[in-house]
Image 1: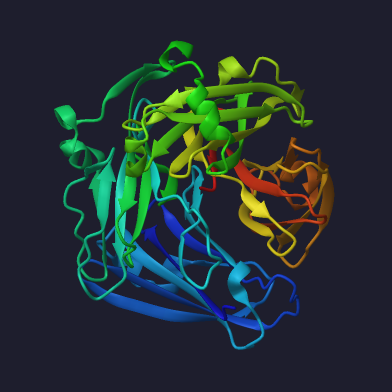
Image 2: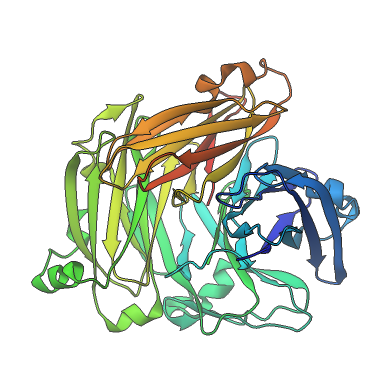
Length: 237
Length: 240
């Protein structure tokens, strides 16, 4: 039974890309439109966490917020990436929000990148949740890794690439950090991922694992278009 | 392609038939717009196991099993399997050669589907599971320049009854469709809700889709969003 659900993700603030948070407060069998509130908190390196509450939401009604309209400071911010916590809650004690969902979107004129952020509190227990994902460098994608720390203490999640430690992943308090593939692959034989010749060209890939005990951090792999460097997919581990 | 994988071994069969396995159901397509590739990543603990057996079942859109593949993969590197050679027996539906694949392997293996075309590639997230208590929701942009497609995959033995409700402005139209047992279906949002698509050049309207399963079938749903660009090319994205 969860009267609140929390997700941890990140956003992009730039002239070309806007970030939207979409949420669907759902309680399975309860369909009455009880009021629901949403708390958005953003943070970045060197900037104190800032939050606000969005009212007027209703149970079983999908809704979305442009993050840069909620936080105008993002329009003048120098940080391109920012961490974001989304928390929805309901005052009705008998409403279980466990089945709610959240989607984050990076919208540009060209297309939209959408992903499911990591649920850190109140969501359904996902048995056997995967803690590994492919790190890719090939004619289509170039991958980087984003580590988000929502706590007031520095964190160093243990990352393994093909079973070997993937460099120093320390992230300061209330901050997020992007790690390029080449720095993560430095621990591999020859300092890079092993190549494979496939139908569409040369493919280099490795398994990136979020190992050890769970930390409060969230980790995302960002797949960027090789030519434009624009994110095309985001996957959490 | 086939030479990179070892033949099925007795050991592999024993592992796959045991209860210690995980499975994932994905949507793939290989003609005429996309190519699909499966990417396999492995947790460190599997390096002690040695070659990891993977079984892939291919079901056509109507749910008929048309191919089955068993491979072994080296867990010290990312596995990659281009699917075009295995899709010859798949029928076309909605003008696409698309299929539902069930990938069975050991716990600690993550299977990711990637689709690509000449205009780019995207990771196709695993379909969001629909249950009697849990419905899926996806944000979409209703625009003449966008073509959102809902991809439905049924992994159960019964036909799935699916309801799609569009939340656009203050209206909530809905439609129902069905997905054959083990089959897959594509639903074009712009075709099924044409009155909500603005005229060409007009600003897009944000909307939401809520998808629920009306019977006890185990079904998954994913969004494939096609965005038209200046030169007639299309960029496609999914939710991952």
